[in-house]
Length: 271
Image 1: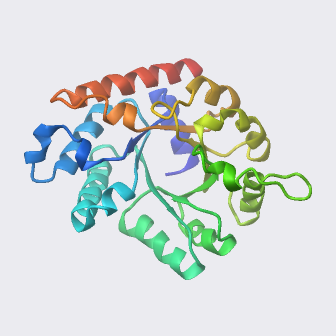
Image 2 (image 1 turned 90 degrees about the vertical axis):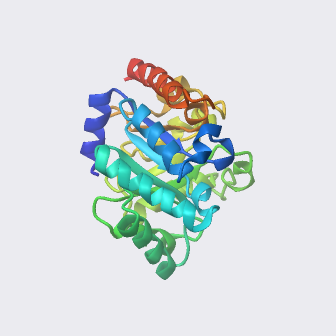
C-alpha cells in the first residue's frame, strides 16, 4: 500500500485508527471456546465489527507464536480474511524483528511474501544491516522503533551523546541515511511520550508515526494530534485492549464496534 493510498483511506473514513489484534485465548468470551478455531472466530468478529471505523489492523506476533502452529494458522487465516473481505485495510505485523543482514532478509521475506503484511515493526539496535533488508520490498513498509511508551524506554532511548543528541533522535537521523523515507518507513512513537512529538516532527516532518498507548495505557489522543499531526495527518493511532476486550459477553463484537466508532468520531474532530 502506498502513502497516497493511506492518505486516501484516512480522508474517506475520517479515521486514522489502527485496531490491535492482541488476541489472548485466556481473555476470549467463553462462548467462543467451543469454536473449531476460537482465535480466528474472535478476530473475524472484531474485524467485521470495526472495519468501517479503522484503516489498519496490527496483529501482535507474540500472541500467536506462543500457541505454536495453531496460533500461526489462526494468524494467517486472519490476514487472508482481511485481504479478501477488506482489501483497503493496512496490515501491520507487530514483530519487532531486527538481526544481522541475512537473517533480516529471511524475516522480511516471511512477513512480506509469506504472510502478505503491508508493514513490519523493526528494532534498530543492530544498525543499518539489520534494517535495510526490510526496505527492499516495493510497496511494503518498515515501522522503526524510535521512542516507545514503556517504562524501560528511559534506560536507553534518552541517553545523550557528547553533543546532547538523545539516542532516539540519532535513530531517526540514521534511518534517513539508510534509505528510509516517507514512502517506505514509519516510526513508532508512544502516546505516553506525546510531548516529544514536536521534536520528532522536526526531524521527520512528512513521515507516518505509529502511535500506541491510547486507551488502556493512558495516552491522550488530543495531545498526540496536537503535537504529532502534520498537514496530511501523518498518524496511525493504535488501540488494542480498550476495543477488543471491551466486553466478554456474546455482545463483544457489538461493543467493540461502539468503542471503535467513538474513537473514530473523536479522530474526525481533529482531522
